[in-house]
Amino acid sequence: MTIHNNIDIKKYTTFGVTATAKRLVEYESVDDLRRYFASNPPSEGFYVIGGGSNILFSGNYHGTLLHPVSKGISVVSDDKHGITVRAEAGEVWDDFVGRCVAGGWYGLENLSFIPGTVGASAVQNIGAYGAEAKDFIESVEVYDPLSDSCRVLTNDQCAFGYRTSIFKQKRHLIVVAVSYRLCRTFTPHLGYANLRERVEAAGTPTALSVRQTVTAVRSEKLPDPAVTGSGGSFFKNPVVDAGLADRLSALYPQMPRYDADGGVKIPAGWLIEQAGWKGYRHGDAGVYPKQALVLVNYGSATGKEVADLAARVAEDVKMKFGIELVPEIIIL
Ligand code: EPU
Image 1: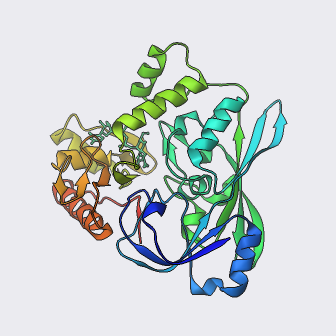
Image 2 (image 1 turned 60 degrees about the horizontal axis):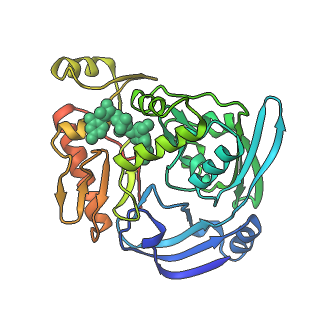
Image 3 (image 1 turned 90 degrees about the horizontal axis):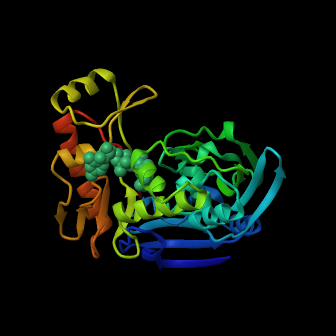
């Protein structure tokens, strides 16, 4: 365990904005957490950050950040129905997906090249190209510092939803490891036309060709955090009632729309682009020119500048379309 006081946390988040944290604790195990909380009661407050790819610090952080650096991937069970693979929360998500594909453990290939950690994959229920982490999560191991105990939550107990889970409400539950149930036989999931065309152009689909194509598509559309700061999609795609969606479709016949639980999902990226923000830049804060759902830091933007831009975009979309955009990014 390493404890840093008054530390610059720029390199701990993909937005790359300058901020300091009063304390940042890198921990490797539940034993480390136990030792830490033995002298720093959880009532003092804490926040867990994984790869920092879904967080924007709008100023300095005056509390404690916990950052898992635990590593380990192991096969828990392997039978004719499938394989269960357990990964520690601190594993880099895309390394884990790569290991699964190489091992012939299939299912996660559509989720390739998503930044972040294995722990965050469960908290956030990450998703892309028709797949979500929850489709494969068997169970999640957590440590609860309030009761100093470990628990295993089954998939049903995790209350997964679109980019959400129980771990977003019960912030005191610290994800320690996630077990994924994967398949021994590969079945391509190519519902996204754009992905299907590119995968099929490369020959008979394999898990590796899907992984390589998803990686290529994401690299083309999304900024590389090593070059341009960002947190991926800034907003969630809103679900609106069918009446509003129909009125908008009459005005904008080309508007993409998808049936969703409770209404119609409209891509936030499309709304932001229509509102005229795609490629907008103010100082070093901007709306990414290739994907309007992504806000970027071109170098020296502050977290507040990015958060202010997000608020302006959301306000404008609300005025023009009557739709509330809710951030997917957590602003601290
Ligand atoms: N669109 C535009 N303009 C834009 C961006 C998108 O018109 O600037 C339109 C596209 O033409 C398309 C539709 O919006 O018709 C959807 O776009 P896309 O397929 O790029 O996906 P998205 O809805 O913008 C979501 C996820 C992404 C994930 C992709 C692919 C959310 C909030 N975002 O984006 O996840 O990679 O689908 O499955 O659900 C992330 O969460 O950080 C993330 C990158």
